[in-house]
Image 1: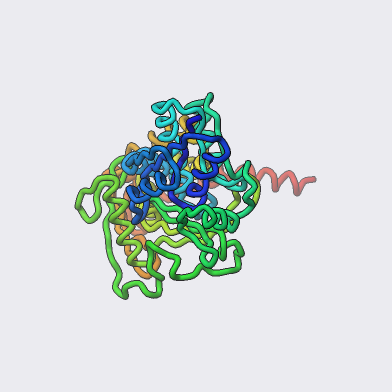
Image 2: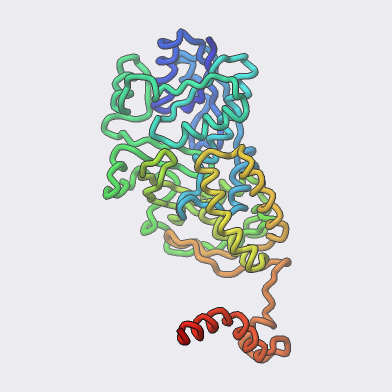
Length: 398
């Protein structure tokens, strides 16, 4: 039997290779999908997979595809789950699953596997993509089958079988990284009253330790996509990396959230997302200039729904594709610049400009103008307030 495993080199998947071989007498093929993992040597992870028992290991660079095909569409939607989470892990899982399916087809594998737990969201994200792209494939989820009950059990299993893992009993929290964020959960973070420890963070300095001088940047968008910083053009991957560095140095992008998982429980996660904070802030400011009121307000409603679709792993759903059509239409005029100040954990808007702007200073001014007739407001208010007036009159009569 051939099984293609979504392999990260972390605790779960390191243990899973050995377990799959024992349980199924399987030929395990590790698939390592690079979505911009922060500071990880993927070729070393590949060696580790083979050393742990994989018969073959693939390393697939999908960073460009991740930024252009997953991150930027969600940025254009303005989707943030529960007002805080920039959806980085949720966005990566469908893409990783897509690459797993491609390897499964190439290797003529009978099954695919992942290291997501039965309590988590990732099992859903992986498996919905498997079902959408290869409905006939068998899915093996060890966390729903084996007798290991905790990450402590996994550590013991790894030590017993000589499997090197990146966590220990003294530092049991886990992390997941890609170009859009680093996330932390488990261990000391499971008590939502506990503050995260400072040496845990990898992308950002503590705001109070950030430089005492503000950094001013100008971010330029074309049709909803960021393309320039301070007038210099960057490709999609470069612009995210650049803003991660700038934001991280200035303490921007930390988030601590108790979120509602799809499976029905609450969980506590800590995230670092410097580039996401900067780009979402800039994008929203340009939209404020170019979108009319009704479109902007309706898009805000759909942004919440879009965030749920991504969070729930429904990337290949009809609804998501339909919403993409609406969002793409709204982005045709989202061209322009946002000027931002980065200072000690804060990303502050200093100004915004756009050649497609609907803002008319001559009309909006509080000074004298010859465009707006202020007497027109009386008739407008009379008509707009007519239902309230009628209700009050009739109520009084009764």
